[in-house]
Length: 141
Figure 1 (cartoon, rainbow, N blue to C red):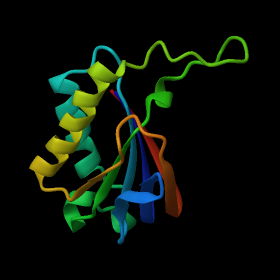
Figure 2 (figure 1 turned 135 degrees about the vertical axis):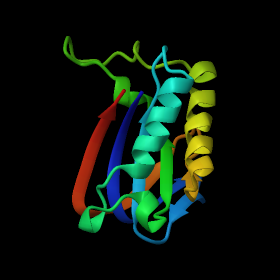
Figure 3 (figure 1 turned 90 degrees about the horizontal axis):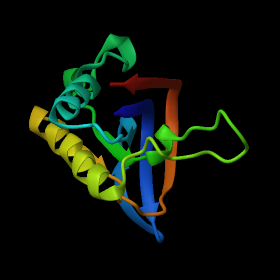
C-alpha cells in the first residue's frame, strides 16, 4: 500500500461538477494506492500512520488537532515507467481488490476518530488543493 500525504489548507474533489468530498479547514489530502497483497495488516498500519504522523504545523498530527482527512483512490501510485514511454499498472490491484481495501482504510481512520471525506472510487475526479507549505510525504508499506 502506498499513500501520498499533502498538508493542505483546503481541498476538494468533484465528479461531474458535483462536490464529492471537501476539507474546509486545514488537514490532510491523502492519495491512496493499493497493490495485490494488501490486507488487514496494511490497512491498520496505514490508517494509524496517517492519523498519527506529525506533519502538521508545530509537529502535530491529525489526531492531535482533529484535522480532517480527504482520501482519494490513486492506482497510479503503482505506475511503472522505467522502460519505454508508456507506464504499466501491473502492480496496482484491480478494482474488485482495491476498492474494499480503500473503503477499509477510510473506515479504519474513522474508527480512530478521524473526520474522513472521500473521493469517488474509480471515477474521473478533479482534485483541488491549497498546499500548506507545500508539504508532501510518501508512505510505503
